[in-house]
Length: 141
Image 1 (cartoon, rainbow, N blue to C red):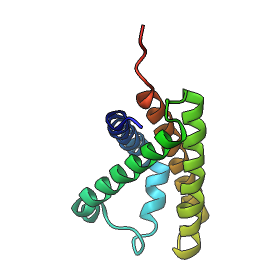
Image 2: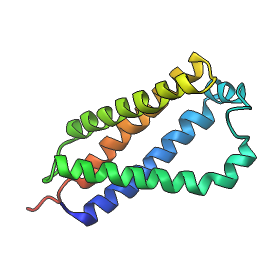
Image 3: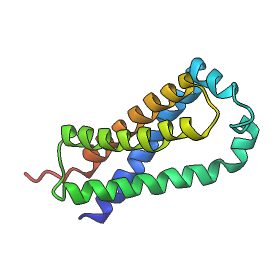
Image 4: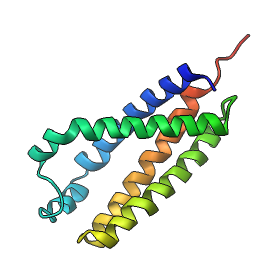
């Protein structure tokens, strides 16, 4: 495993995760409106801002863990398709372990659950792709 490549891949994938998350969750009014329907469950935007550093650090750590798992699975680096498959597996894990599971324990509607599931899957798919692109070994001529 190449730890500097893992670190770079983790940082790059984290940036991609937050950029895509901003687009999916903040820019799509339908998903944003769904969250707002559940004020007893979800924090207000002001409250979220207070705890955002913890959430950002937790995602950074999670993506570093995923980058290490990718490096363990593809020590020499895999291709973009490998990254997409890897990201899709992590995405299915996130959807089943969190979005669908949260639908069971939180009092939220199916529309929000499906929206979250799609957004999380796409985010983790992109994380896998970015990790594969950045973790790829340097080409020697």
